[in-house]
Image 1 (cartoon, rainbow over the protein chains, first blue to last red):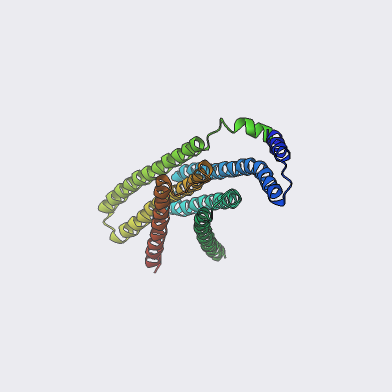
Image 2: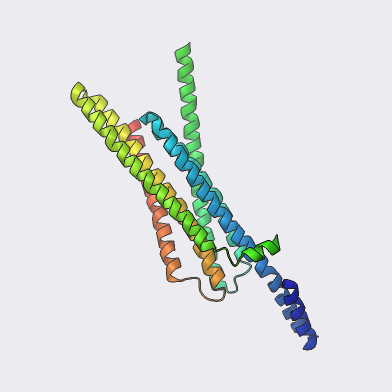
Length: 160
Length: 141
């Protein structure tokens, strides 16, 4: 399909006698665009679907583990809920990274500066969000590690 | 691969797929809230009944604090689901807006509404996280 389009463009160029550098560059850009646009569309489509699947799967896993912890005592439930939330945040972060990648790919297709600026703003917001999420994950994982260490030391003290 | 994709592409609608995923996540969030509320009511009833029988005030206060914290974490978990949902919606709506009209503006009404919702959910999430952090600090001291 693409081959036919390219052949048609090239034939058109030959028929019209496009020998000038301006016409040649126009022809090259048209050929590149006709090759590039479908590939980028498919790629971004795939990446968007992947991001959706990641969020969907992490939500399903979170729901399963939420129902699993309901049997536990209430104090442990609170801790486990935090862990579930962190796992969900990790999934969200991964999906956000995928979407940022997809947005970067989309910049190839955007013709005007105005739309490019808007996309840049959106990407900026996403980057800030992913940065804050990763910071939150880091803070929580240090808190969890500290709690575990404290529990271990108290259990060893009790044993001795 | 490219041929298969080009054959499948007209029949796969990204909007429908993402809509079904977001619907499922919404249902999950609602069920998490419902379970948390039911659980909190159940535990509060049990502990209040026990405290009435034993008349121990200090244990009842600490128990109600634990129940409160558990309820809040449940709500935050539900909010996290909603945040994931909005992240998904935002990503898809921007891509749709760009794909459908490459030459026109991406500032459609739908896009602006989703963007406002996205910002609101994220800011609510941050505010609740801050207040819960303060609540935890106060209780630990």
